[in-house]
Length: 301
Ligand SMILES: C[S@@+](CC[C@H](N)C(=O)[O-])C[C@H]1O[C@@H](n2cnc3c(N)ncnc32)[C@H](O)[C@@H]1O
Image (cartoon, rainbow, N blue to C red; front, side, top):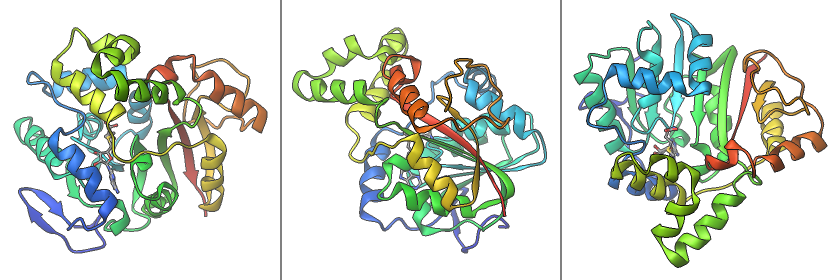
């Protein structure tokens, strides 16, 4: 396969590489029990399209990608976003994840919905199975902070990106995740009831499926491996890997307009504003949602 630099065996329609690393194995054991994010029984192309269109990051990304492009999702889980990116496009989507049970669900969904432009790869990002300078776009959201070395994982990921290609990386924020960290502590002492009460995401999905509730609780409060990061740290990763800063959420300046185009170059602001915006995450929708922050960059020679 063109997008692979190592020869991988195809098992049940999934390109497979043996997972050897201890930390990755711990993480995959966690997700193999309950793959994340879960599909509802009623999910089909229309519902995934609808969910994706409601996610402003994913929608902007898909619109910007356009057609006839090569897109990589690192840490795709059950592949819902990769499916979303593929629907109605002729893009080549490669969805990589070390958790086999998640990819089995992705494969089932793709087969049942006749999705043919998503290629599934069961591998650890650290095993470097993907070709260098191949993809036009890379999406890795909520993934690298669950690895043994997020910075190294980032370095490996950007190797697969073509010059002029774009990367979107989303990580737990050191400040923005403070509320979740406090709830995590309370969860350990008081159990599920307290987070059902305090977690805004759980309050929203309370009327939804119990499966969805459990998946979120496990992911946020029981995860065996997680780290937290800052905008300045990722800006340094960008600099060291020849990635030009394009934009971030939260943004890096005092401009409070949240309707900016994520793919139009924004100001990098200064350290003070960046910290201030990360501090505000504690109180805004970003902190509600687990404290994820996002940076978008463009590869340059
Ligand atoms: C919280 S889930 C996020 C799934 C998906 N990106 C989403 O936003 O719904 C984290 C995913 O990262 C994957 N992951 C963990 N360690 C990884 C590694 N070393 N290489 C690639 N993916 C990894 C896990 O298997 C899991 O599916």
